[in-house]
Image (tube, rainbow, N blue to C red; front, side, top):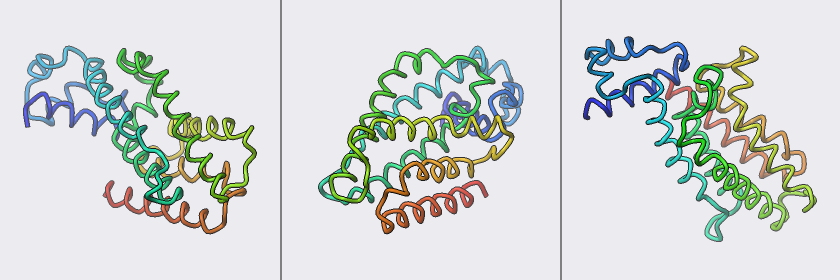
Length: 214
């Protein structure tokens, strides 16, 4: 792995683990076994590191946003796949969701893409909820699906930031808490067997996350 790639990989891991505001370029350089000047050769500031990670985040997010209900699998299985893709995204880039108070405004690439990311997220969640209604698994009025969609996005998007601000979970288990929380929005109107499948999947995510952290 080239030095630039090693810097990005370590920075992303340490930002996720300790928080963006608690990691210095000097500490990163020392852990990598390079001089801070060598790190600055590749990234003039920590903000430039943020921009490089953000570029990868936008690409990764667009891949996750391509998921839609499929005729080849049932909608609950598809929604579990969506939850898993979100989980991977939040684990890999959770500091971006959690630490905006530390890094301030989004990097330019995120700002350039954020409207499109939200538009695609709304379309994605709406497609899944609409399909759950269509196949008789979710009892939800058509004129309120957009409200459910927005609320689900808000809980997943800002759940980590809320947990941080209320001094709750700061580690990878916080990701699963956000998924369990978003299920409370609609599980009371969802087929009980489907609820069990989703909650079992969320529990597996929690177990896998704990193993990953260990």
